[in-house]
Length: 459
Image (cartoon, rainbow, N blue to C red):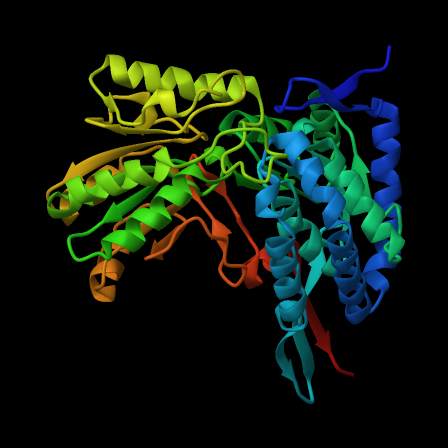
């Protein structure tokens, strides 16, 4: 009996899409085709690969009117926000812009005796395992630079967003990227692990849970396959006594609640200087209380359902445990009568501490805890008191102060006076249980290639 993957729509619990997985034999054959096709792809001029990727990205943009409601059905994001093409295009375009310089040979010498230089050469076949929360943007982070660098790509997308890989494959193939060079594949966990263990890939990029990252590392153990991992997060915001209060509240609360809190670098805990704490909380409650929770296909909806009931249940459990331990929930449930199943009302918690799971474990939902702090030292200690390290958001008018604090935070990215944004010119990276490696920027190209040295003695 053929195993199938089912996307259960959070809108109503119905099966929105269903696809059969590849058998182990079919998957092995797909990887072999990718490896064979990669050689010719890498031999094409860099300018040609760049142009084809740009064209494929543009073709995805032409599908946006269909993609936006598909995303609402698959993972619950309200249609009013218009999908992901802006960020998708920004990231791919930036990587295309910098590719000639990032992938250029490093020239050491070319004199009468020797020609010496270092090339950046592709790994071969890159497996991209992409998540559902921003399914187009997270996939393109690796897909675009991997193809540009001369790799073949196999994309395994999350079950919750089954149609995303198909859309990307349709677009890329339509503009001339060979079908075997970019493949959308439906794989179960066992087959994925078996392919990795069999050295089918030169590099694996995984975005997902900490448990999923551990499974990837176990599968690759002893193969020496390169792995890039972006895993969990518990990103903090720190509002200092000299911050622009209104800007801090508006941005941090949006960073905590947008996409129903299902953002890799969403704000999950906020620390506020004593002098601003009461005003910050009051303004935050007013913002959240005005949200409209509902069907994401309704243009008036500002907060859609979480992608799956089980994700909402995790946040409900964390919130209930915190309240039982002494936290106070400030958002009135009567404002959100739709709450139930995958539909989860937003919540702000105060009187929280780090003994509570909601301040320690990843929530990935529309809940945020807010704590009062007396000074920078206390805020730094609390921000670092986490197993995760993806981003941190600092709010102050003093850049020197922000930089001093930033140097003491264990994290991948530090923002000042903004949050929840991925700048493709900067390396997207994390530390601790958030993972390892780095995407986008020049470093993203370095991770998707390997150095090869040429030491040529002239006759």
